[in-house]
Image: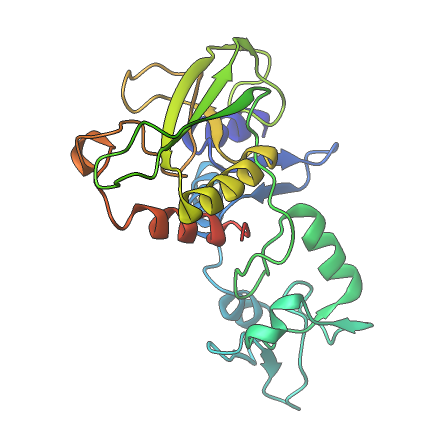
Length: 268
C-alpha cells in the first residue's frame, strides 16, 4: 500500500496523507474538495469503491437510512433515531461539533468525533473548519518590511507592505510526496497595500504561514520542476503593477478574495 500512498502524495501535494503503523488505515488532511479527490484516486489505485456521501455509506450498510442534506443529520427510517455518521450507530456519549451554531445538526459519538478531529479539523458532515488546520510546508522564513513612499498601482498614498518568503533546499519528510528525497527551496516576494485592509490581510497571512499552509512541496506550475517548494492555493500578489494577468495590482477585489480563501481554511 505504501507505493499507492506515495502516488497519491505526488498527485495531490496539497493534501496531507498519513497511514497507521500497521498500514490498515489511511488518513487524509486538507480542504474537503481536495480530500475527496485524493481519496477517490487512492481507492481507484486499490480497485475498491468509494462512498460519495454519508447517506451512501449508511444505505450500503443498513438499507434504511436517510440524511438531511441541509442539516447534515443522519437518521434511521425504522425509529427515526439519530445515528453517528462515522460509526453508523446510535451515538454513545453524543457530541455536536462547533459548527452546530451554523446550522449543522450532525451528532457523533464523543470517541468518533475526538478521533476525527485529530485527523482533520473539518466537520465530517458539513466540511466546516472546526479545528486548527495544519499543512506540510517545509521549514522557511517570512519577513515583512514597510515602505511608506512606495505605492501600488491602484492605491494612492498608502505605502507598500513587502513580504519576503525564503526556503532552503532540504529533504522531504513523511508528510511530503517523496519522503527521503531532496527538494529544491525557493524565494518569493509578495505585496500588500500599507493600509488598514492590507494590515489585516498581513495578519491572516502570518497565521497561515505559522500553520504551514502557504507553501507545499510539489511540481511548480511555472517551471515544471518537481520536488520543489511551491505556492499552496493562497493567492499572493507578486508584482506591484500589471494587473490580474501579471499577478499584480491594480486589482480592487484581491484583498476580499484572499480573505475568503483564508477563511475557508479556518483563518479569520
